[in-house]
Image 1: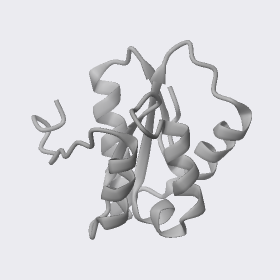
Image 2: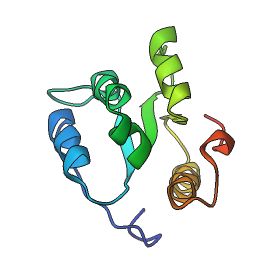
Image 3: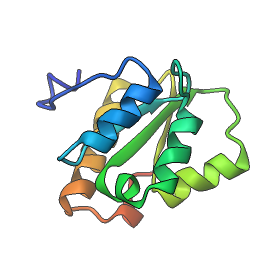
Length: 120
């Protein structure tokens, strides 16, 4: 879907490789992070992102999780501080495209992070 919308897509097979890819990237990325990932789950990945100002500032993030999952208050604060919208599954494909578009605008400076699209 995202490729059909004109976005380049790269995938990481697990959270640790995703973290390595983020650290190595020379370009800002819009990152779709799932809650459940092998080797390093979404909350674990965001712990590293919060601790690394470059990772926090250089990329825009979207967090995907099951619709019925309770997000603990501490993790919810982390997501809020990073201006990370939460997409709850199952989500509408257009909602995903809209969130990616908003994240891309934040990265290119046409939409300030504090005006990010609301979470779902």
